[in-house]
Image (cartoon, rainbow, N blue to C red; front, side):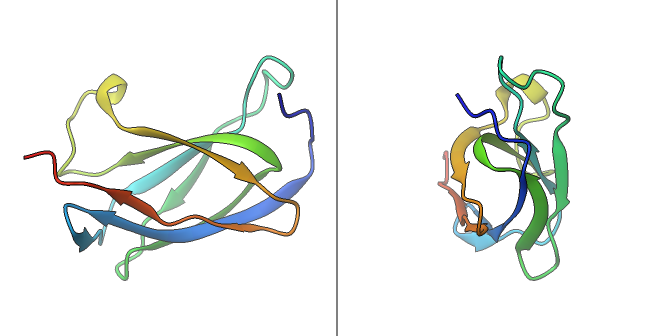
Length: 98
C-alpha cells in the first residue's frame, strides 16, 4: 500500500468507444487504508481528449465520468495506476461495450 504524501502530475488522453472524449472528467482517488483521509482529485477532460492534475505518488484508482457512460456511479469503469514521483502519463482507453 502506498503511504507517500508527495504529489506528482498524472496526465494522458481519454478514448471512449474508439473516439477521443471531448468532455467529462477523470476522478483520481489516492486513498487507501494507510492514507484514508486523502481526497479524490478531479481532472477535467479537455476538448482534445486530454486530462492533467496532481495526485499522490503511489497507487491511485481512476474512474471516468462521461455522459456516454452509465449514469450509476457504482457502475463506472475503474482502473488502477501507479503514479511515479517524476509524473506519469496514463492514456485511458475504454472499449466499446456494444
